[in-house]
Length: 463
Image 1 (tube, rainbow, N blue to C red):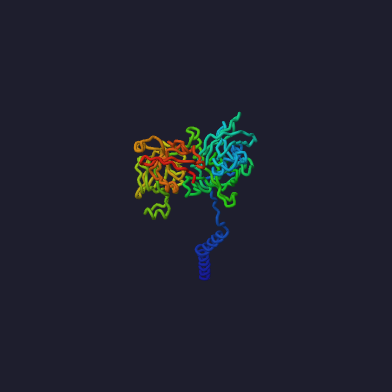
Image 2 (cartoon, one colour):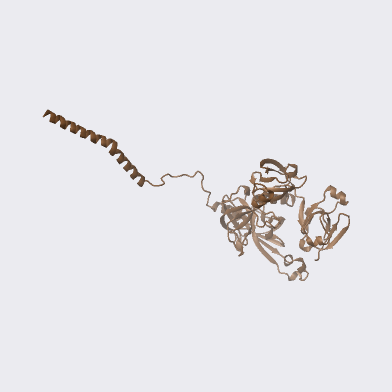
């Protein structure tokens, strides 16, 4: 009996022990794994919320619109029919028989005492300019000055009260993708506001026309009548003057262009202070790099301005720049195309200094360069310069402008070439580049030249 009890006790103890061992080492992991698999199936695939550290840009444009609409005006340009005909055709009409022409556009008040900025093409050939404010007040405007190269004009109206105006913003700090508003008078619809983003900067619409263009491109709707209107940021600051569109139909198709505010502000200041625009000259000649030019010039860089030559005695030459150097930036502004360089320099005056970072044989260096006054002008397909002291001695005259580059084939065939002087245009002496601005190229009658041998040659311009 004792043996039986002992055997049963041992058997029961072994069974309990076996169950305990199984439960601890075999069954429990199975349950945990099952629970883990189950939990993996029910948890969401993305359960961590990310928080942005930079807030999205303000998309409520009401404040910017309120700051701008009352400072944007309607510009009405009345011009005589005589001014709208080429000089040849004017001989066939009596002045009283020519109908007046009326053009319209927009303008931006930029001071409380009535200075207005618009496009030159809005007011050119005017005989009368009428300004209508958003409050339907009408004023007669006077032209203070114009700059056809940038298509900017400055007007002035006299009002008894202080006028609402727009503050200048810094167009150099604008970014692609930034929200902007275009405010103007399309189709004579006063104070129309459209919104878009900056699509590109330093845009040159025609790289072959010889003009320095550096537009801000936007997709804000701009149509006929918007010319001269305001492009503002979301703070209501003026960052550009709407100037052009590209379109096959003649209407807006998603591309509009504005002159940057830093250039506009500089032109405005020059006109008020000097009566004309003062442009600073770096003194370099060359091309903006791309892959094809990089191969031709045997350089590794595909971006930047490649210097092929320098004007002796000007800032870049004195600062130590040389042919084959590649300008990479100016005052921290990256130079990837010619419009980047010309556009930034257009906001600077002669005498100012800029920091040029350039690459020479793979090594980058930064130098300070003083800008000089532009000493040449293009007239009738000729590059003209004012006479140096040496040239005055060589020609034995203080009168005239020096032809540094002859591109007029018609004059070239008549024997006029580089190295000649122009003494008179339409029987009026020309001694400074500013004298050329007083001449209407459509009314050319004659030009008096002086060759290097001291012989004068007067050529009629009827051809």
